[in-house]
Image (cartoon, rainbow, N blue to C red; front, side, top):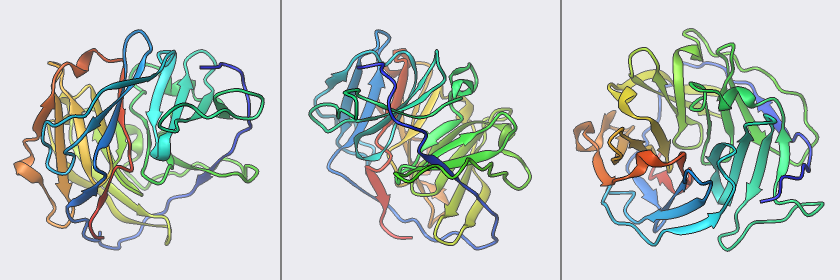
Length: 285
């Protein structure tokens, strides 16, 4: 993995506004034959581990493969289509990588990444690593130190200048973790209570379809929470258990009465865990 700096800042921020429109039905998820889950081991090796039953939460896995080294230098985020972001712990740069399934893309100048933004060191600090996430459309969401939500979308156009997307009260400062679980769907965990809230933003109309809806409690137990899209969440418990959940937005309830299904063990020893955020999609809106 090259550490040469290439590219320019190409993430343009979007502004979010509030609407009282009611949320549309999400329905059960449709998933790829397998949802790729990615982990970084303590020595920096990056692996892909296909979960074969993301729809049902069954403990059925494909073959684990190592696909890279040197990934323990910062915060790792998986995006759709093989895109990975790394927030470098030393420089604070946000770097974009592209995994092809069989190797890594090479960019102009021969490097294996593009530096697409700077000043992201805040998200490598303890307590802040959960405040950034990527949705199924590739949009990067982040909670700023001021408690605002910012959304950036990858573009090949020149940057138009970052805009802070201040949320209506209560501010996003009360959350210690956000997890994108679909295009515009974001779950946020309240740091003081461990309660989980669901948000949904429609980028076509520029309105919130759902805002600050309480959907769960007790989520503070998870050291890591990530998604493979389609309102499907995975959590890592302190004992190493990997637990799968699915929220049915149409019914306004969790499958299996919200108890979750254990689909693996030994996950708490990893430096980072994330999933392909576009592996699952809702069957309907």
